Length: 155
Image 1 (cartoon, rainbow, N blue to C red):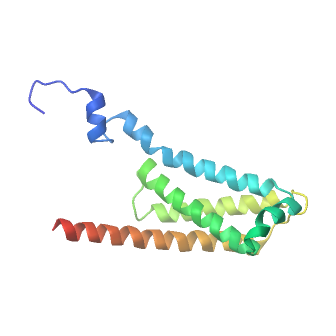
Image 2 (cartoon, rainbow, N blue to C red):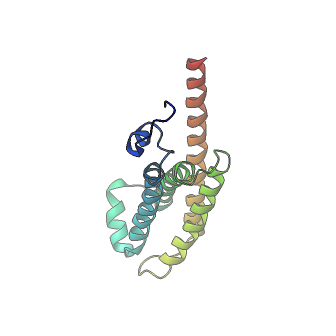
């Protein structure tokens, strides 16, 4: 920008989203997505045993596999939310995401113990944590691979 020229905030936001508040709010969409994802898991946990079996029946997958898949997605969304929304480092975000998933998985199992036809299960909690962990390992590997490829093309 030329000295003495005044900037229009809307223009700068398009080129540098971190320059203005609108950019920061836009990055928080990932946090909202993570919270909505958690609400979806909570809703699935409120279903009675019969309704949950009917919903999962067509997939033909065991309960622990469904838990691993659901929490794998949650972990990836939280990783993205922590990195993009809260500006947590690439090294710290996976650990925080795993912790969030583990605590939420525990609360989910406790919640299920109060739902008719459902029960709390250590196997499901383990599946939650393993699914989240595997997804975070894969997401980290893909992120490093993409960064290496971009560096190679740039230099």
